[in-house]
Length: 209
Ligand code: SF4
Picture 1 (cartoon, rainbow, N blue to C red):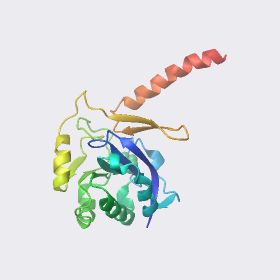
Picture 2: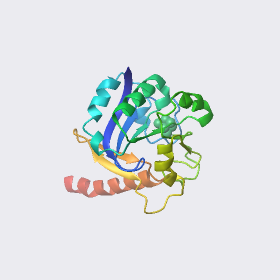
Picture 3: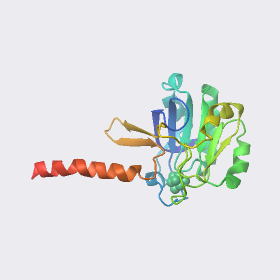
Picture 4: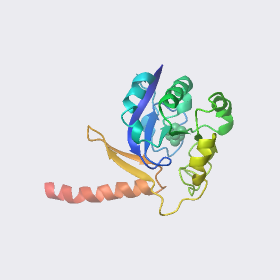
């Protein structure tokens, strides 16, 4: 089974409890206004088989507390998602969190068909105008569904409002030097980051003159 993959990363510490393997699926037709991952929208032919993907995860698994699958939109590749979940369950005791931009009533039957494979799921589209006070969510309309006993045990702690002590972003650099921000930024984080980088650029430009 082929899966269209955007990227994979370990460790991710801001998308669920502990050190997690993050898997971002490629392709999303929902086009939420203000989406911070438009690079994952297009459906590209960068497929990888679930077997190869799982093989690549194996070195990380002994150190991983859980797996977070996001996108893109995982439910736009339902068969690949199902196959990936089955494969992960066979080799990991960690919890599995899945993000979806679909409203719960649109994916509920698909989630039921995957019973026991997803421990927790965050549904609903990102709404840039909604408030953002809840941990793990980009906007307060997003709903956390705890679907298994393990899901309830690990994710009950996230049914609360965010505090200033909560870490919300990881920064990582891949082997090609590309920089990734992982997690759920606060509404003005990206604007502040942009300003900061512009301020860093100014002295460099002056030096080059
Ligand atoms: S569902 Fe996620 S990836 Fe898709 S547009 Fe909305 S925020 Fe972006």
